[in-house]
Image (cartoon, rainbow, N blue to C red; front, side, top):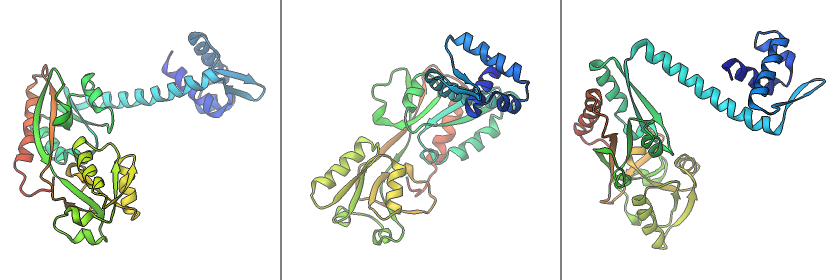
Length: 295
């Protein structure tokens, strides 16, 4: 199976026309048709059902082309990354994190690090789910996570980065937005958004408030949906400070709670590169030098 055959197959599925597909691919129709035929012979089943007007996908073809489309996108990204890498870099370090703001100082760390190690590329991988599996499969060199999730990890080194507090997120026009700190009593009588993949610590705090019987609550599937509901005035929510994008769209008010999230970076014990050590230390120093930054 060649990349051209993949492109031809995806294009025929899109246009359902041999003539239009070959025209869009800038090849003759016989060449286009022949390559599709070779591909079907290689995979061992009919991808298309021919008719007088063109071709439509068979049930097996629908599943196959869906897979091919994803594979082609991955291949395109791999080629682009390879082109970037070969043009400037001799080594790379990838870091998996759920959202960009989780490691707020990452852009600054990259700027500082690349002045010293210009031959090493730092590549963020944003994985709201599956980041741990990706790291364990060696698909990422660094993993941002909570320390509570590292207890059973073998073959990894854990680097403590910062402690993140709990905040109340509300619309900026909400009366609670003017407070310096939020207490349980402030939340009574309100609707609290809960769920959405909340860490165990946050679920415990949410459950304590719910068990008081003095608040209403609304289950939200993920953080982005929660923020949409907050913006729509449907409720308020509690969240770790490391999710704050500092855009100013919402008010983030400290919640009166001593519990904090212990945010860490994990690396593979077998990765003894000097560049890795320097990048980790660069990030740690940025956080160590922080004064009164909302985390």
